[in-house]
Image 1 (cartoon, rainbow, N blue to C red):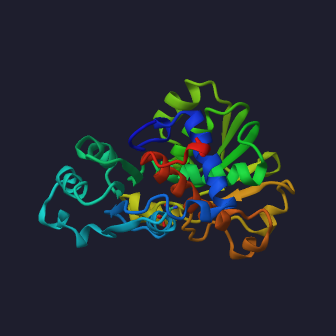
Image 2: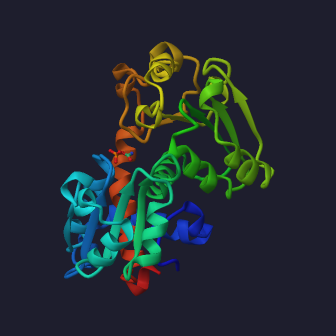
Length: 310
Ligand code: CP
């Protein structure tokens, strides 16, 4: 089993399936796991804002009977004095048994993992990767659709900077019968390395389109994303592109009755609030699933999965 989780591909399909199965067991019987991490400490080192990821990590550790420490912005850490990421994790690994780190720079959690004496979990690095969001996405798809194979998945919005999209493509490409439909303007298409090193290399079928309407009826899953304002160099470009796609009830009328709508959140305008009442809207359940997969991941990386659950 991997010691760190930096990229979804650090986990084998069997390891991912094991984490999802354990998450479902936690959902079914949370009391059984309420003291599994007693006397263990999770540090959350968030150099970039977060609501779901940081708080769900902290809730996960607390619900496992462990404790939490950490910081929620670079401004409240000694990074402001010039301390390096490597030195920061070297110090924090003296105080904690496992570390979840979010950083605006791609590769920072990878660097941290080389310096740390305890497991490092990438909680999002720049526009690169967000593997624990992917675990939440996979658990949601599995619970909503009953399977992770033979699905047509539409990814819509900011496919360039949306790290959750990159991680989800990497993970889902390893299941049978997956087809992607990539819905974005030219400026926000998936990065070339995802196209060549993941989709083309693994002969994954995909097509790229500009509108939701032309493909809505084909989708089993629609994964909406926010245009990532914080990654743009030019505010005028962000303003021009931010409302390219808005899912509302009129667009949803074109979708299959069983299509599942996912979104890593936070949303801005890309899903109208009226959609929240549609049974196909899974994004709030997806956020809750994020806590359960993080519980399963913490237990797994700390080697604390009970014998009968291995
Ligand atoms: N989905 C997600 O990463 O949300 P936060 O930025 O609130 O953690």
